[in-house]
Length: 234
Image (cartoon, rainbow, N blue to C red; front, side):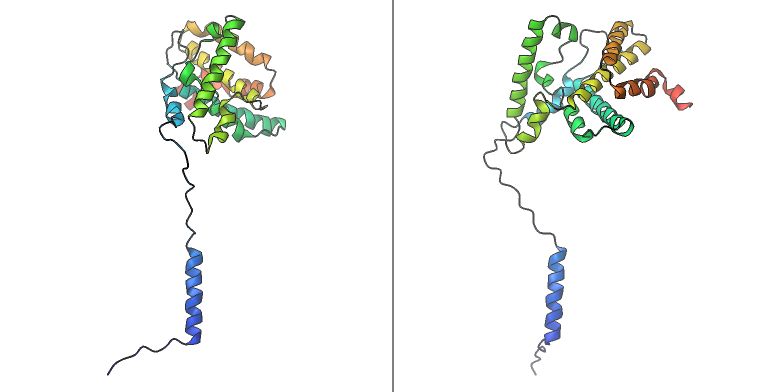
C-alpha cells in the first residue's frame, strides 16, 4: 500500500516561514567587490617603494655606532608624534587629531625613497641648494602619488604632498626629537662624532617653544641615557 506524506498544517507552514526568515537574517549579505575599472597593476608601485625605505640610510656623512634607515626613523617619528599629541591633549588642553598626526608622520619622509636622505650640512649650505632640493622633493611626491591606484589616491595625497595642517608642527618636533635621541645614543656609546649635532639639535628644540616638547625632554628623554641594567633595577 502506497504511503503518502501528510500535508503540513497551516500552523506548521507559518513556523517554517518564520524559521526561514530567521535563517536569512542570520546570514550576512554578500559584500560586492567594487569594480577594478581602469586600474593598472603594472603602475601601482607605491606600496612596494614604501617598503624600500629600509634601504635608505640616514646620517650618511657621519661615523655611526648603530646605523639607522628611513623606515626605522619614520616609525620612531610616528611614535613620538603620538606621544607629543597625547601630552598636548591630556596635559595642556589641546584638541589635536592624534590619528591624523601619526599618519602624517608615517609618510613625512616618503619622498626620500627617490631623493635619498640628504645630509643637513649639504641641504642647508645655501638658499639655492635648498630651493632646488625642495623642487626635487615636489617632483618625487608627484611621482609617488601617480603610483597609487586612482580609487584611493586622494587618501594618500595630503599625506605625501607638503601638508598645510597645523599638525605638521608636531611632526617636525617629533622629527627633531628623534634626531636628538639618535645623538644621545651615539654620544652615550662614546661616539664624539655626534657631540656637536646633539648640541645643535637641542638648541633647535628649545627654539620651538613648545610645552609638549619641554615636557618630553624633561620627563621621557632622560631614560635614553640609561643602560638596560639601570632601567631594570628601578
